Length: 459
Ligand code: IFM
Image (cartoon, rainbow, N blue to C red; front, side, top):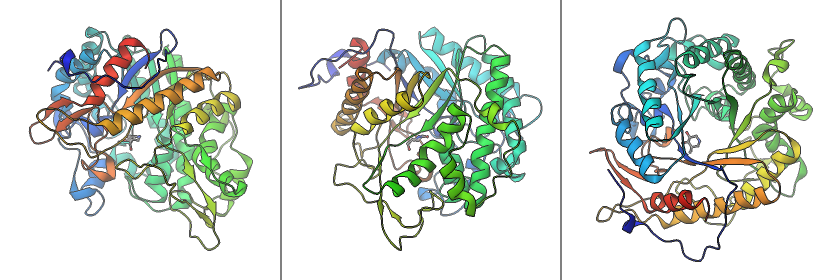
């Protein structure tokens, strides 16, 4: 489909802002959330296939079996991206398509799909940005302990090598993991995400093996001549008056990943506080050197800050093991359909902090966006809340650049409405609406607005 210029909404009241020359504008997705084709061409089962079939785990029993059927409709999706003028597209590779059991020889039919996708993107003048792991672990590896087992990190590096061998001649930018916080603490501590385990003591081993997997994969990619290597973290400024509460949550949300990757050490306060869960004996000699191998970019996923307060008797929030006595008050500000507060200033604070505390690593916003309850009216979606959200966050990103942050690009989450994990298809993050019954794509007003932003490199 094509987008007509006259449908394009003009942004009112926005003072002009220009981003640096060469700033990368794009959109992001993830394999399990959009591809569908769950049994095509030799794909093996992933932990999300299992989890979504477990009663009560995913809204209305939704699964990624069909999703946006991107596996078959990718040419149309590339055309939409071309119409929007995007310069980059971040997508993830489905590990179980490449190695159905998580190890051993490559399934070439799985690789063929990404070959076609990458060629199609280049044909449309769009730069592919590959994420190697966006949560769809092969089930066979989970059956052997998943990320709580060190072996998974080793298998991940082999898989990275296989994918690079096929796509490395046409893909320059590689990110290893997407949001290891979610994999470790939603997957193994709270059980909100696959594999649905509630073993906070093992979630720290999962953190370490995810990071080790990142380091081993980064080493393999570097040895194979990869152009640019990074990792994507979901980071949140932590707000509140109680310094201890702020430090606990900041440690578990941000520093437990940033410090090992960018400084080669786990933060002492986090290690100490987690002592009641683990003796950290899974950290072996040399691991931190592997984890802190130099990277070329840090991917930042930002949605909202966390607000915390000290509160006697408050039970631990299961996604932050050891957070007893800390409450998470909801600030009195507008919220998205996820109930997440809209606080764009947090993005400025975050980017400025990263540049100050972890200097020398270029930053890319690899995800930012919002779910709202969109309605299709006469073939249009007037998602003014989303436009306002994106406008506010781009202004916040620009402010960070002015304050000295080395920010190179912005990738909106998400190109398409898609399978929002435990929320199934109930939450829509796309700038392009997907009618799941017909697979019809309809660019929302936010897509048309974004096209203008991209075209003028600013607001
Ligand atoms: O949909 C997710 C994505 O997979 C990872 N980052 C956050 C998004 C919105 O929840």
